[in-house]
Amino acid sequence: MTRSLFDAFWRAAAYCLHPKVIALSLAPLLIVGGAAMLLGYFFWEPAVDAVRASLDEWALLSTVFRWLTSIGGDSFRSVVAPLLIVALAVPIFVVASLVVVAAVMTPAVVRLVAARRFAGLEQRHGAGFWQSLAWSLACTAAALVAMVASIPLWFIPPLVLVVPPLIWGWLSYRVFAFDVLATHASRDERRALIAAHRWPLLGMGVVTGYLGAAPSLLWAVSALALVFAPILIVVSIWLYTLVFAFSALWFAHYLLAALRDLRGAEGVGATPPTLEPPSPRLPPPAPPQGIAA
Image (cartoon, rainbow, N blue to C red; front, side, top):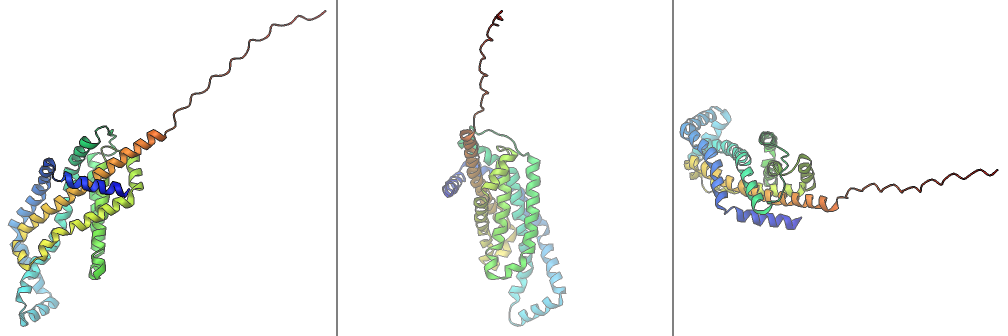
């Protein structure tokens, strides 16, 4: 199983360089990134002003801001409002990128992997497009609830490095495992594979969660990055799209191979139907013997 994980990992990394995959990654970027640019163009300055005015109305924060001014911390005060907007906007756009990649890009990626590696794998259509979309939205809502509920744990240094990637990993595992198997596996096959490979799939999702933390480094470089926040949000969406595209490829290579092995094992281990043996032919009845006088 470990060998299958690494084999699928390197195959997914190689497929990320495929021209079709690169072209497909532009669709989520255009959809989500375009929405981010429009929202930033029309609402960035009003949002910053509104958040700054709301912060000034809080007595506790106004005391903190006056203290910062007295010690020369005006620069920090000026970045609080943009930082809060970015902190609220980026997770929303990340979730939107995941849903768009799952709905738009994953089916095309699965078709590409299946055509190149699993051409003979039968499509049993265990789930349709709307069922996959509903599943993605339900899992996303559950992950967002868990993320909000876990915010107090983020202030504990070790847990902040574990809890968010674990939640994102669970979300990636649930969404991509379902979507990858939707076309080729039946409902029973999908449930059996997800149950049998639950821990490897969760591990793949957690790795995806940690890879998804890389675009956040754009905001850790400097507070000056907030000046270019609308542009950096679009760049972050593109990086998240690439991470999710790699994840979709990784899940596709791993689960389609597991589905092929499952059907192969069923074919080898299946007991052929037994034919009822023919009934033995009875000897003809003996002719009646005469009755002696």
